[in-house]
Length: 128
Image 1 (spheres, rainbow, N blue to C red):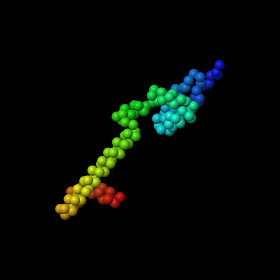
Image 2: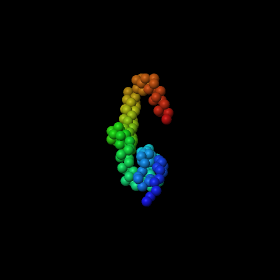
Image 3: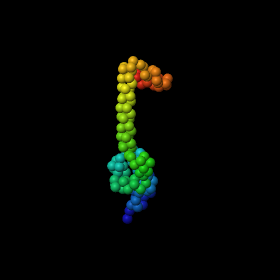
Image 4: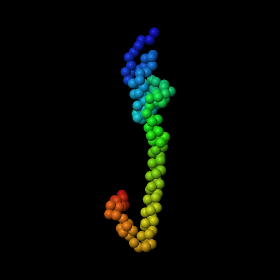
């Protein structure tokens, strides 16, 4: 017959199973990106499938994903990169259009039609 051991959050399991605190500690580490599921399984001597079940049962990641519209952080980053790329293309098109107008009509459209704050912002971006 096996001896009973007390469970602490970082202790190994007894024959009765894993403590709630132990499970939550592993789920938190995985969700925060401190360790992968495989690393946690090796480090704490727990099965990967067990960790998957704990994440499904105790994890907050699903709630966070639903709050973000069902997108993972990687998907959200990819969407934001695409939006940034589109905005940069639009800015380049507008800048080119203004330069063409200035060349064709010999007016300084930037100087004539922009507010002072927009002119300062434009000068600062041109310096970079």
